[in-house]
Amino acid sequence: MTRDQPRIIAMHSGDNVAIVANDFGLPEGASLPGGIRLRERVPQGHKVSLVDIPKGGEVRRYNVVIGFAALDLPAGSWVNENRLDMPKAPGTTGLPISTNIAAPGPALTGHSFLGYRNANGTVGTRNLLAITTTVQCVSGIVDHAVRRIRAELLPRYPNVGGILSLEHIYGCGVAIDAPEAVIPIRTLRNISQNPNFGGEIMTVSLGCEKLQPDRLFPEFEIPDLVRLQDDSNIGFEAMIRTIMETAEKHLERLNRRTREPCPASDLVVGLQCGGSDAFSGVTANPSLGHASDLLVRAGGTVMFSENTEVRDGIDQLTARAATPEVARALIEQLSWYDAYLERGQVDRAANTTPGNKAGGLSNIVEKAMGSIVKSGTAPISGVVAPGERADQKGLLFAATPASDFICGTLQLAAGATLHVFTTGRGTPYSLEAFPTIKVSTRSELARRWHDLIDIDAGPVATGETSIEEMGQRMFQHMLDVASGTPTWAERHGIHNSLALFNPAPVT
Ligand code: CA
Image (cartoon, rainbow, N blue to C red; front, side, top):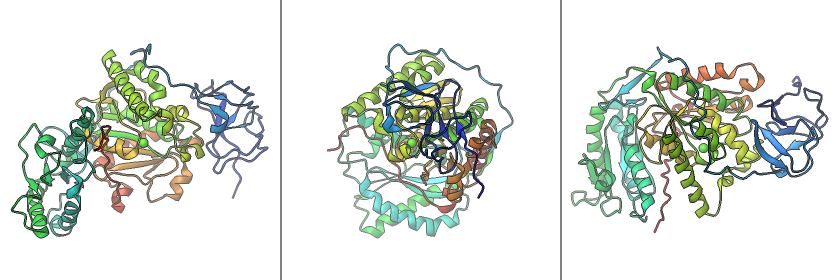
């Protein structure tokens, strides 16, 4: 094995730290570009001071103060979470409002994918039968029925890509009249209408639960409702038979759907990261930001999320808000989330994980700066409250917790039909209702997880590939996967559970 030349990456000329790029880090005494010698071993992705930083001095990355030196950090020191004091979160008043609205790039035409067009004009990337459940009590029965449907019915409907249960732990034992209960309820309502399900709503209810079907879907007569406690369901087999018979009617209709060419403007993509490391903000997320800009220029919809991972950059977001109303909506969502965290006696700093820190991210400020860049540079044209459906195009901020499952679930409710997920530490996360393209921030991870990671953004760190080239590749891959190319997770048939966000009490 040839020994790598020591490589470091600084994000901005105003930074006084850079991260070590070499796989497995660099040893004490290593000579860095610029002539600095490492005073100690520094792991991959971790920061090294480029100048003498005195105790209390600003530590800058992304040209932002990510912390203050907790001790003297002479040039060549390892700068980690134990050596940094975290700055306070920026306030929510006096922010720049719509002061940094990027000029739109030239419209991008000629890009299309093969999607499933729905009667209401939305377009799915998959053709799935989803069974909505009103309460967890029915899940065992529905799960059994789903397995039977998959084995016995699905082979007769080759145009249907799969069947899934919209399973959750909500529905009963909860304070359903609490003001914030609207969030889980509308989330479930809107997920049931995700474009990947073709407008086919099928619901299984228990009967006695708090979340009654007409409370879940107040705006229309519920077609094909199966209620397990109905007198007609005598025993287990009758319940399974009723679900299977109802499902078959939906399969017949879904089977008539076929893919047709659709412009890229019909695509709705949710962006997320999880298991982040210091490379997230260097390779995968800036490339995804470029891909996001391309999709916005093509007229599509992109949503970024994760409240705690944008909170420290609130000023960047309000400045990018297309209108003062959008800025106000952003501030309202992030302020509500501050109050939500405060009720639990924590703040946005509760976000970072041991893995983030091992990966070089010292605190939430540094993590947030790397997370925000996946939103690219386009103006933010709308804000989607948790569980609401997005009703406009362009770059949207969908306000969600950063929890991978909850964020993904809320993006599904918002109408995302495709998910792009960047990871540095590595997580096999994906959801069943939309294809989840996984992007690694480092090539070492992509090599180890060769049959889980869909795109390796690592070559950006070595300079073999530019951010623009990687972003272009991601954009094309989004169109391919939207057209039916399976992700690794789809090939293996693996997925995680939905997780409804319920900020209201349980009883
Ligand atoms: Ca996340």
